[in-house]
Image (tube, rainbow, N blue to C red; front, side):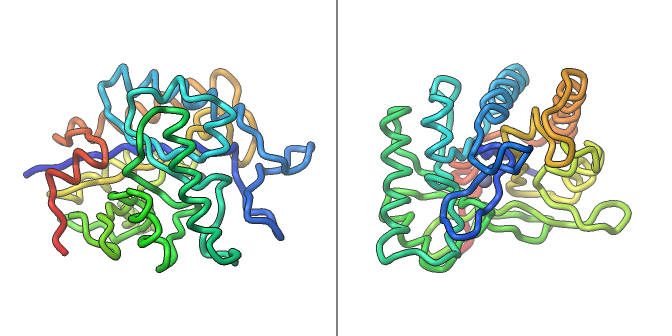
Length: 267
Ligand SMILES: [Zn+2]
């Protein structure tokens, strides 16, 4: 039995929301409008990288271009970093001709300028990857994508998405029969426990389990705003326990490219 945990972090503008009439996302309005904010993402990324380094977890970071320009690349140096749009665009929206390709190329070039590496991984904002996008990603040099949800099975093996290697985020049901996703946001909001994700982890016997979170969610809640120091500590402790459950079950922690090499895709 071989199981891999790919821990993934979306590094994007704080509590991002689509804004009508523009391709660029905003941040949820906390009384000062919807202009994008980056401070929770920056603080959360520091907490996450410290925690993951201490635990020896090799994670994959999907970094939105504008956020990278705002928070700097220091915390991401030497890590596996992929793209996540330039301004957190919804790629299922209406774009002028050629604009999707321009934005994806700009995201890759920005990452190369800031971090000195050419990205090979992508996650599209809002987990939305329309049919024309895989070809554009491939032309930009992307090889691995993690923008789809798939039902949690005993075997979770990468598959081809128009030639890209797709490593999906699992969705399943919890011990009580309720829907649960490999995204940790309900735990950060106080609505799920680490043991809920351990239950999911126990249902996969071979392949890659993608767990996903957002950097900003380490320090800010959608409901309730910026967390107190005590809440931030409790939130980090929950994340530590969640990952420990996977490690206790024998999961190896790997980046998306590392795990994809081990589990060759089936189509
Ligand atoms: Zn995002």
